[in-house]
Image (cartoon, one colour):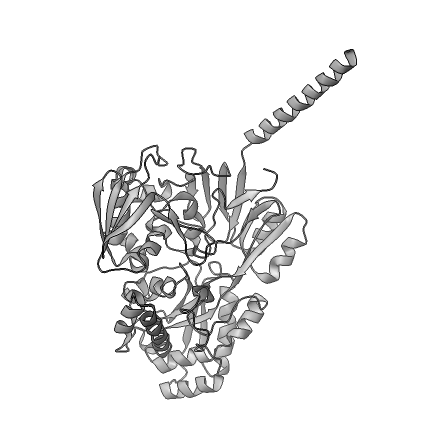
Length: 520
């Protein structure tokens, strides 16, 4: 009897100890510390369009229409809208989710939706023009039908309406909060509806996001996300293996071994649907000659760049397109980006080039291997007789004064798996490169062809227009596509995460169902 009671007591003690230990683990804050190559100055969802900002916004803000992160073709799912339908060729009606609590404790309604979207549909403040040119130039207005119903109007029927409303720059913020604190303060500590909210932001240094416990959806898996800027690759890897961070971005192929040889870490990587490019300033007198621009393109050996910089794991494109479009919009037979030094020399002669210096500007920290890529291309250009100067810029410059710039680096992501997801977002007449005069197509068929490629509802007509658009773009040669980079994320090996394929590159998705930790 005594023995049986002792054993029973022991079992109770073990169970109690286990339960207490479990509660103790659950009570401990679960933080994910992320080392990023580039950081942000603002977290205003309707303003921020860069690769650096993409790392944050998915976790903070919701859109009316969301995407399944991994579905191909695109699959739309309810977000802040529970349903939507077209009620006219240019009007979509959306029913809003009831009871959505925002980060400041207020409840989202149709006025927040109208405020958030109309500042990018018809931007009065210049900070919202980039989003307008990239996504929303065909959108006109938002009507409030009632507290939980809105109608969104476009200028003309838009075959990409759902897709564009699922872009993160169509995220919803609090009208009341922004009007109370002002745009600048709201950008430093924004109010959205997402599963995490901003606790603190030190621009270009550190951001701390904490769980939004009143989030309308599934509870976020971490108590806290801490993003710290570590611009150098070696320093990011050191921070990871020393357990100062748990997850790092922008690891090139030749540095993966430095991570994997240390037990307890793993790599997730891919050749991203994104181009590293240089935008040629077509308004600069020296760069206005299309023969010179075509010569610059023909002198580049992209296969060699991919082999040298990305260990052969990136992609050397043949045209401005991505395989992710799928058939029939992906056209593997297109081959414009050839390496032909002799043809480049002939075009230089035709252009009357007399050895005037051509300057390559690069940012050593913003684009991984941007400096090495610039040096490699400079050597290729010198071999065909081009006088090259390299200019390093310590700070990334956006849409400022480019009057004297010959060309500037940029990246051209695929924001959604459609030709316009990489083309319209960067080269439309509303894009900042067009409005600043860097991109100035002159072919008489350009505008009409572009209209068909963007707005045609007949798929055969659209495919034909897009093929012709590719041909015209090659004739203009207003940009230099270098390659699709192969970049990896490194992390503790107990972290389960994969790169979202239906979102734009560089989005870090740390919502429930998108990341997990083994044993938790």
